[in-house]
Image (cartoon, rainbow, N blue to C red; front, side):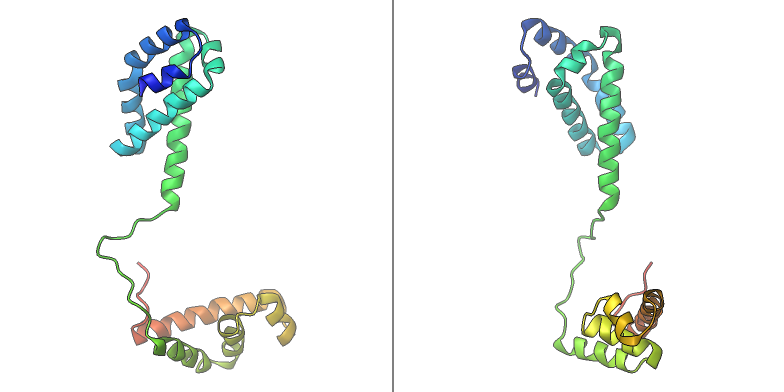
Length: 175
């Protein structure tokens, strides 16, 4: 990693200082990233990204007083780690044994039948929304209802449909 970083620096003085800085703090920065991320692979990735940012912004790095460069790098590293945590929280990993069975062609028909068996106030709206795939505004216009009423009925109807799907074994109760 260090040779790649050094190649991006211009002067021998910058390279010499950076080499000393890298060797002196690489373990500290890794431990710091690990304390935030709690994952060795992510911590290593964060530190590498931090070193790359340091070199890409070498002008800023070398403009900072030498005694403040470690703090500068810690701030860069902290921002990288927090960004990684935000990205991680947006994704969920599936269990290794997870597998989605191919839908049975009759399932669609059964779901449509369940919708059609619902109370009138939800049935029409859910048919337009989920069977015919109309937008809420078009449904509101067609049924002469406010859009908020349509949205509320879609939400309540969806909840009723979920309850029916759970009873029929098509849906698993959310944990």
